[in-house]
Length: 183
Image (cartoon, rainbow, N blue to C red; front, side, top):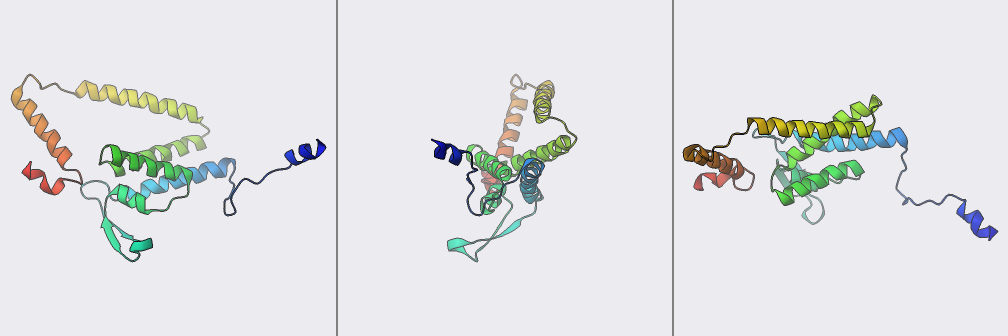
């Protein structure tokens, strides 16, 4: 009995050989920096005048060069080991799978929110207070959008114009942008 008890009081190493342990402030900063770096990586590709990135392939396609401004493609190609950065990559992948566009926007928005959160946490603001503020902001943003929304369903001409504008925006996505005039 004493033998089992003495073994249970000894620390057990559960980390793999190359893993490192970070504690408290260092771990928090590392997470923030990793996630913010993901946003910074794809930020320059955002928008109609976004810049392309050159990706050099490894593995079976080693040496092949790919030029893209697609956030999902860039983030798939980047090897990430930071847990918070992986969350941003996963957010981008989910956006791509469910919507097919907006992968860069979602990564940049999340990174910017984390950048602001890092500043607030360093000022000793509790993370739950920050989350509560974000939730209030979402409610305020929705209310603002609803207050400026117009219902043109009674006016056939304006309604058709709205539908055409929505269709153009949708067709301007990366998938169909070169063929939108055919629709």
